[in-house]
Length: 442
Image (cartoon, rainbow, N blue to C red; front, side):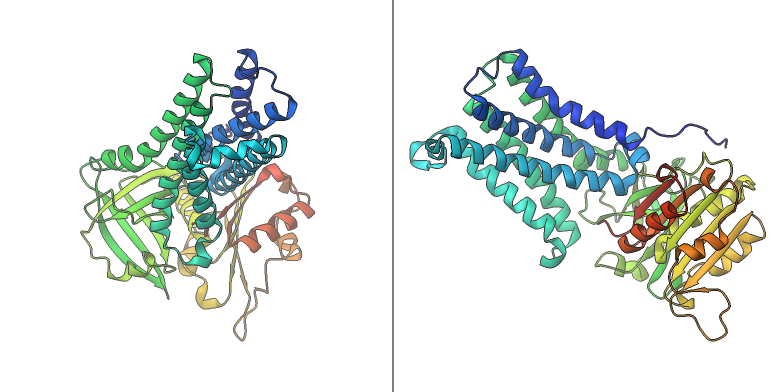
């Protein structure tokens, strides 16, 4: 397999495109006379509400597992952008309502059920759904909402927000008096709902035609397992090292228990995939009891950490189970007989938490691989690096020349990722050469 010299479009490209699309409805409304001059503040409020609606519709595209978007931003940046745009949409709703009430307090009448204003009555459903959406998202861990239940209700509540928002806009009719704007609102809402249906219905139906079967469940370390699946009567899944896939166990691909895991196996073998899974929740704690020959469904590949374009070499900074994408990269380099330099910084709390240490030692003899383990609590007689991965540790082991031409990939918990970005930037590594993925974004 040849390495490509092309990089996916940078995040700014997608961000600029997103905001360009958000500007379309207001621009169209203005050009078509949809803002008839009711005054600056009223027109501003209407524009804020319109942009909020289209912002919420755009959220479905961000989470539709659109491969070029995931490869460009990485799932980490993609989901953070998704969260920020959701916050922006909610803020614009508050601006919309606040201005309308401040300028004309009589607009509160839209919220009076006794007046029977259809555009206002639908606000109850929209605001209730939006409030529950924000509460369940921001407080999911504090409220201890199971991930599978949250994922289902998150999509349903978002769908309610879009539908009620569209009905509200059409019923009030401030800027949908002409057919073009009405088509724009209805078409965008339909596209958003299709994106939701594509994830919940179309993709599972497609998965039925490409089943997998569990071929091995292997113990690696306390609470860490490797689960391997074998393609059943199809050619498997083509992926790039660093990508992840959604895994469902059982005969029904429509099950709520669908979870994302980074693929740990070599990209040179598509018919057998391995996932390294740490016991962290209800689903992952069952790995030890998964029986061989269990039916499985794999949806992907998704996301990615582009690393195949750096001719000088790759540096990977892993914390804990964040070693998984690095393992896939090392195994792929071995199978491709690729001798590019690969430096792996591996942080762990203790020596026993250095999962796959023996395999990495073997790979050192087959690759141009340098492994730098860093232990927070080293055992007696440990001669390697200790503490946390610091700027000084990085400087000691990174190449002296041409380090700015290497790719730097980071995978681990949030605090580690932020620290590594700061250290690399201080060492003169351009931000465009740094990519990161969090393993706890669900």
